[in-house]
Length: 322
Image (tube, rainbow, N blue to C red; front, side, top):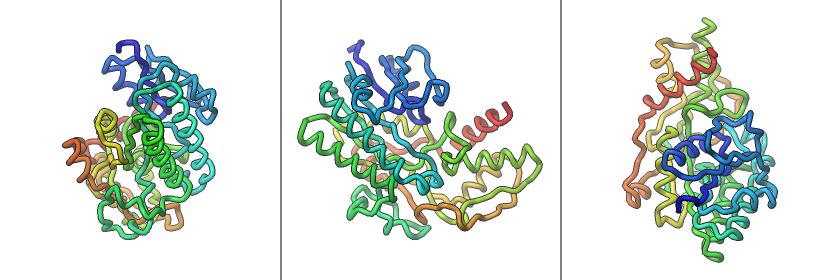
């Protein structure tokens, strides 16, 4: 219905801001909710019911979902590996958001509920080499996820499952794999590898000091998904009949050194790499197995890593110069 409200929890964040923009383009009536004051939101969109609410509180969740037919829960206290490894308790406290938001959504008879999980739920023992076998959804069990953040995500996945089973609240869960792009964090400690590398290379170019720090030996591997692909996949999963958690990521595996190579090419320069071997690293290798989402939805990311990094690099460059 035209007056139905779609709620984006975490709407002031990186992915949430892009999701709100897409929902507006779809003609939806949107309510964006985030704990941060509006002045700290990554994107603030006109024509949206923008609210600063602490969704760890039950009453805030009730206010957020009032009149909502769909809820997208992207809200969490998180960041890059440096933040995750040094703030395990803060990451775990995000379980309050999902618990209270599920309860409030059930009370409000919300039609659909989406939870943004993470590849950090996967068992660490399956991610110990750089040539890692791509992670299938079943690899989350037996459970040994990323300490703190990964445990919170895995527990919250189970909450969504049981709200579907016990209360018939239609829930959908996507396991995001390293989302990057414009209008995100690129400095300050919460940034992830693509934005951090872009920022470091840009600063090296602007300063004339062509050296950057690289965490670890640079051989650790990951896959990275551009933000527009993340939003497309999120919509497809939300409207699908998929009831179990499903990977949402790129299967294009690269090392951090290869990531630097691509950014160097974009910048038109080379840098000296100073490897910080005692920096927080996370698992040795991680990649998304997209077999299931290909079978269910005939979907894979459409933006290559180089194309996405070019857009991200230009945006961060403009931000730094401004």
